[in-house]
Image 1 (tube, one colour):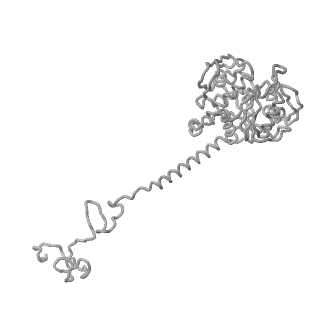
Image 2 (cartoon, one colour):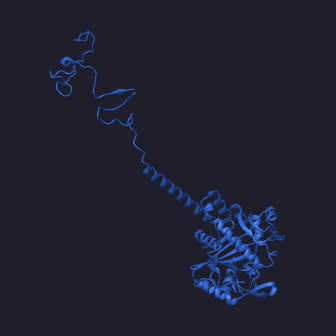
Image 3 (tube, rainbow, N blue to C red):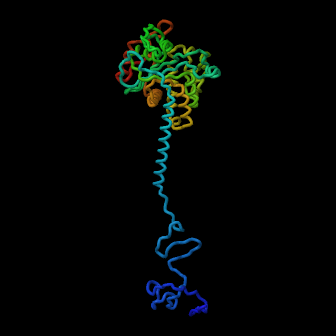
Length: 399
């Protein structure tokens, strides 16, 4: 072992064949590197490396720390994270909305071909819907029929008929009493395509019984002069299911009502009606005293139903939206040209009427007619129809 000066005989080994610079930073004046100017001495110490604990801190003074090895973490880019989250949320909402639209659109029962209706009036301002409640028991079990007190009659008849006009000067709901005495005109059979002569004057609901929705539209157009743009019909079961899917509909019952025929049994005051109770309320006829009183109750309830169905708590809540849409669309029969946007417009218009942004009325009546029916006041009917077709504010009032 070689002894080195001032080392006491102990020191690092020389490193053979290692070139050591004789000039540059850290060299002594004699040109040697290390102790005493001995160029061949290597102390093993490098000023470019610092060891601290178990981590490598990086370069020397003034040099940046090596990333990921004990240096300070960069500050989070919150603006970028917010934008990314917002875009993700919008994409999810878009996909959900589009999926819901196509799902709901596929469930609409477009079964009424209005193109087969003869001699149609010219279209006026706005959009006119004919909304029909039928006594169809389609899809109801014996237990359902007993619960809803629908009876067991086969086939279906119109239980309520409402014209809804959406116009530039406001929305108007006009109930057509089922006992209205009208002329059923010449018509083309919905299935046979054959032309049948006019059977003469009948109660309005007879038109539906004779040839369904298209003859009903034909009869309403013939007797009013209004062009019906869209048709919507729902049966007993669908009506009750929609109410139940919404969790009931709140109504202010004007008086105590008890009717064994419809099953209505209510105390006066504000209360929430379930599907069976709601159906009993709108069907109540004998206790109401007249068909006109019943149509007023139907309008009140349909407006309340639309008002509740069109609230954000239903529209943006999938746990209420999907059951409500499923319950309604499965049994809702519409014309072939009716889309979801038309259906939404119809409900929003009904909601507007219930909120005081329109007119709710019965067709003007002049008195009684044969078979206990009701005769329309044709002078006021023509005035009313003229205002609707011309987009004017409705000033006609019914008794």
